[in-house]
Image 1 (cartoon, one colour):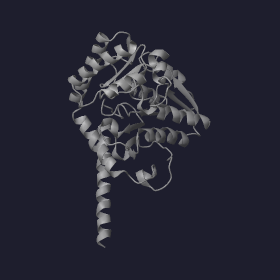
Image 2 (tube, rainbow, N blue to C red):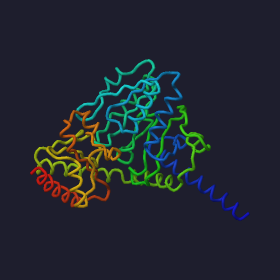
Image 3 (tube, rainbow, N blue to C red):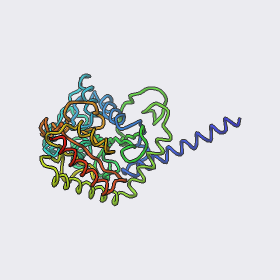
Length: 350
């Protein structure tokens, strides 16, 4: 009886904690708590949103619109759907990574059921015109999904104002724990579950809840928006200082992505005559963590699909370095990075 009582109490406490986390996520993006579904990560959220909507609405149409610079979780999901009889239009982007709204309008067909465009690119940081895309989708009665994994915590998102129907996020991108994410689905939007089992998450995502992770996600998203303004100002200052110093001290480089309309902590620069792998190895020796592109494509020797889509040459794409500044970084850290980069690039070019 004592053990049974403890189980009941713990079950109630757990349910309450998950509900509070759901409320915190909902408050951050201006939606209802019941419109939030917890998942294991952003990739699962993308899969559940895109496949779930397409499977549920396949009788209405089988056409999807996305862009050429989406995260692999979206691109590979669309490619899987193409093998199942769906048609996908992959929109071009300009040299800054921005989609064309007129091209989006022209791509819409009678059987278009979903538009999926990321809020901000994970490699070059460019922020897409999400509010305008939402307007177009709503005007044509098409569902709009956005992968906001990179954006949550970095820019403010209002799903109502932006006419967003589905939105994906992942906790570790805003200082929460790894292995937990969330999916916003507007009330009334129907989608099929992808995994069978229990009736968790309103019977849309079977599996035992990652309670600790969910609580951490809720706490992290709440904290990230409490200090939002100061956090952004700090990162933008560090980012712009870094880019200006690299341009001043290292010749033959190219800044990739929009110079201003980009994530506050993102800087993606290509170094002519350098291989990213060599650069990353040398930086690692100096205790500096960076990336050659998407963290999810580590080990892939091919040039970044994002850089190729914005017109960067294969040679320059292979020498790209993505640096992401965070809450603990200082100007001293940036100075050390610039000094190290200058030395390493000079050595490698010799």
